[in-house]
Image 1: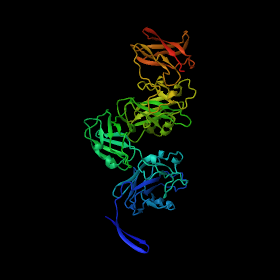
Image 2: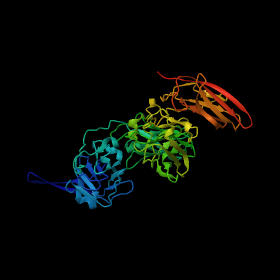
Image 3: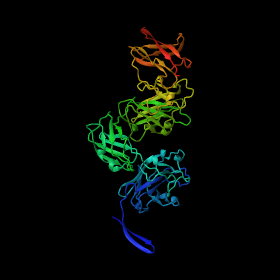
Image 4: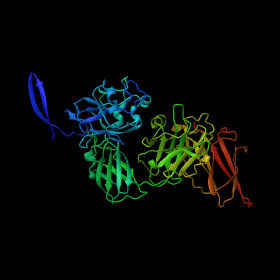
Length: 573
């Protein structure tokens, strides 16, 4: 073990003694400030840097330490000591002189590039111990202007180094940062919350990866007995926390899980850096992911004409019995000139499982969507650089990892409820995810009572297929066309015994006057439906009252049959 000879002079006397160096521990030194995007500069040098702070009670020699990102690692640090409760600016060797006026600086070779959008930055001792890691992203600034560059990200409470986004935000110092000094936002911000198990993915049939909401105690997280999986023949036989962030854990199983089955994983006795033990949110689902086929995943809702301060979103729904990985799904549009699929965007580069019956919302700013609409599943949002979806008409496309089209919607603003004067901020919702996507009758304006959008949960206008007892049936028999999300329209369901029939459908008022031609010489499938929204042929809402739906079907063989169904147009008071 290395020994240091220390000499102190006090009151005219010399004191000599030896002190043994100590192996550094996790969180003895932390990263507490990051400048990932120095351009446009405010008053700081136009160079990337991180600041580290010694939070221990002893001096620490950093010789042999390294700083890493997800893609690269720096050269080894020279022999430099950082005192307790002091700071050190670390930057590229070529930039070190630019920071001399701010405090102690260490310039190192191969300083890793700090991605503006976010990455994981870690510091490791010469023994290979991960001392601290930070997985930042642009949302941590909590300030749209400062996230554009020139401002640092600062840690709020350096005694709470593991909680991530809740303990970081943009610097408030007018220089743009505080390298070499206490952070401008320094404050007491203790971690009193329990860690949560937020996600699991199957790497293969016997290997699972769990993701926690924050850094967890790696020793406790690496105990296999702290986990179980919902299957009597499957047990956890190994667990290991993943460096450098220690927010992920790899589990090994004694037997393979089966495809198209959903399992539940539970974690117990897991603690965070502050000693808080996992409590309520300790279970999650997992399954083996499949490649999506056509119509497995569908476009279920789209907001293409947001309010002036809003943004677009597309909601997708897993209507299959399979588990998918969102990193294998892409969103796109079609070029307006050559009609080719374009602006292809991967939903995520991280494995996130998409289970049967789940909804996910794709947008550029989930925080903004959650401000403007109710989000009953706030974790089911994916932020991406969205393809363009024009306000009048356009095309939304879903692709699988092979580039094959899983679903495609050519939407039109004319599909909105005709009595809506201004459709800004109103989404189009799919009525039935089992019916064809490209059918205008299968889309309707989101209800006013649902806030004109239902991102991340069942649509306000959702309606499943209705089993028809006879050949013609109307459901519901009374409706109120006020776009409040409750029986805003009625559906005429038909069923015929053979192909080749044609239908004419006319709606009459109580005194026999025709008010709406719903279909004229419409060719019929064996079964299907038509919808009446309570408007007449001039797209004016009809008065409250009783109406007769007269349906005539015929074919070229001379077969003919007529039906009369009564429906009531009501109003809510």
